[in-house]
Length: 254
Ligand SMILES: C[S@@+](CC[C@H](N)C(=O)[O-])C[C@H]1O[C@@H](n2cnc3c(N)ncnc32)[C@H](O)[C@@H]1O
Image 1 (cartoon, rainbow, N blue to C red):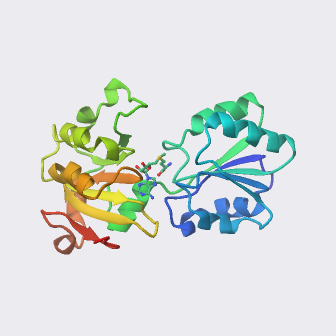
Image 2 (tube, helix red, strand yellow):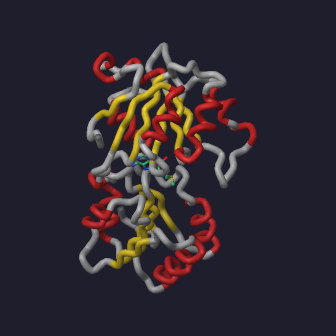
């Protein structure tokens, strides 16, 4: 890290503070100001910062409110880190921020992070690309307020029967299940992963036709990643881990 750009957009990983890259950790230690969304980025990560570093929790702020503050700090000669949960390139509204930085002629760097889908695969001890079974991973989301292009409609993506990682979809579990069932068999294994890497992490295994029911029973509305994949059945400890009726793994809540 010889020449540092004034703004570093850093992937924080999914939850556990240890799951940031070494580079991300070093940049946090050098930062004068850190912008982070408290609801998605664990406070523990801020332990890498200098005690005097300014910490700005953006959870209740709009992008329009954050950007002028961020730009003002750069103009004051401060080193700024913008921490993003998981990897910044996925569902992080980073595009809008980069456009604003380019317009303001501020140079920035992006430091990748571990995304929720990778944390899920690791927690489940599963390879998402098992030879002979599945060789494609699809990262997508339900069509909520943001909307998704027609060509990416979930039922169409389901036709590939790939390892499908569904972000931002807990509010739309019923529609998602319905659309995925257009092509995946009902018994396709699903892992419902809530707050991976956080102390209240919960992972529930079910079948595709139990995705919506599990979401309802577990009262999940946010920070949930669904992993739908034939590879889940191929996990080495299948007989212990998989059951046609879902059950809790790891830190079971009840
Ligand atoms: C705004 S997006 C950010 C995604 C993030 N950039 C990433 O790469 O993981 C938030 C969504 O990511 C997923 N997510 C992020 N962190 C998660 C975690 N620790 N456990 C489960 N899902 C998570 C959930 O689908 C959540 O609704």
